[in-house]
Amino acid sequence: MKLIAYSAGETCPNGINDSQVIALANDSDPREQTLAGVTRIDLHFPKFTDGRAFSQAFLLSRRLGFKGEIRATGDVLVDQLAQMERSGFTSAVLRADQPLDVAQRVLAAYPGFDVGAYQGDAVHVRPHFVEAA
Image (cartoon, rainbow, N blue to C red):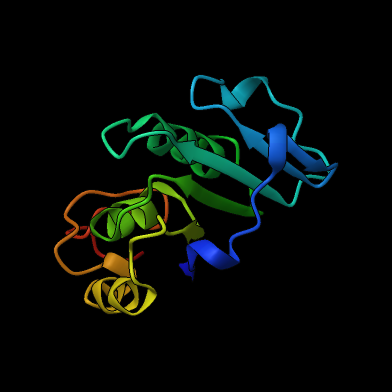
């Protein structure tokens, strides 16, 4: 997962930056979006306690097969990064008070999130306990 410091994060103003980048409100249904030509989708966390963007990321990556960048924006905390990665996010813009070096260390503690992830997820579909075919 690519981590972006708040000061370097270029998010889409007012929802749309150009035709290749879109921002979805956290109450939008990703299945109702036209994704042709889109290379990045910004999903917003208005509060760290609002997890709807996790569901949106999962829908985009796993069910809709979106292969572009799925970026977390808004109230993004260091301790949410591993779950964000499992849900399908490929990058995250950290909240202003979240240090990039700490985020990198935390995420490095869960390489690929294979160890300990018993169930399948958006990144690794097969559960941990199932042998590779």
